[in-house]
Length: 295
Ligand SMILES: Nc1ncnc2c1ncn2[C@@H]1O[C@H](COP(=O)(O)OP(=O)(O)OP(=O)(O)O)[C@@H](O)[C@H]1O
Ligand SMILES: [Mg+2]
Ligand SMILES: [Zn+2]
Image 1 (cartoon, rainbow, N blue to C red):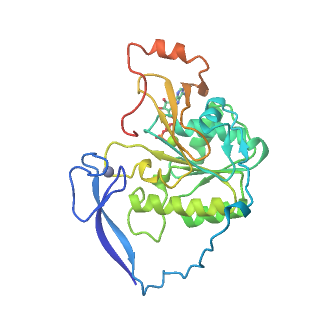
Image 2: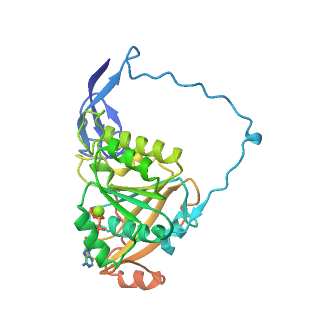
Image 3: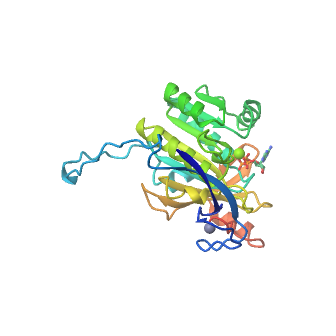
């Protein structure tokens, strides 16, 4: 039997507490706790599946697979990724609202879509809105398929049917699973959806990019609660009144996190900045763009 239990969850880091707290003891954020009902499956429940037992393997006898990297065509991003996006990997791109996440990802879809289908799932924008952006970025790729859907069951079915080269989820906070009673964007929904996508895409070796909003209020779960689940975590950062953006890798299972990518947000999209000293000089009077929330 599945029973509902009430817990209080930090939307920043996912810390759970039986009572409401003003300050999170795990990440020190203030006012990030909200009430969430979670399904508890008891041991007699029907949801408990008997798992086949895993057997230990001799590591020397395991056939090693070299990571296959695909260039995204955006050099600044490829560098941050460690030389391209690894086939079958799960990448999380976080950033504040309006910072340019969808723009950057659509540009990548265009490059990766030159030799394979791309499934762009959006729960935020209509096909017409994304088309407008594509027109502005001068993207005319025939391989980019748009899916306006938020139900993970339908998304999973479409991924399996299409078997695309790349799947984009824009954004994780808009997606939901019927099996979880809490609202989209809550910690338990966001984790469940990510786990479902991860399983589906890893099994089929489909590269996946998940977009997540970094928010300051505690009503929706931030991308930080997913950092441990995914292979690579990138944050797009910048100041509202500057056009420059910095792409930072904070976790990478396939490379270092020492690189940053620099972009300028222009009419035609995110343009790579190959001469960062120019950017630093022009922002000297302001601040070097970063945001304190994702650290
Ligand atoms: N015509 C334009 N010329 C230049 N910049 C534009 C233009 N239209 C939009 N932008 C910029 O693009 C930003 C939005 O980009 P984008 O939608 O990719 O961001 P996002 O991070 O996906 O935002 P959201 O949180 O809404 O999903 C705007 O904040 C604005 O700075
Ligand atoms: Mg967007
Ligand atoms: Zn916390």
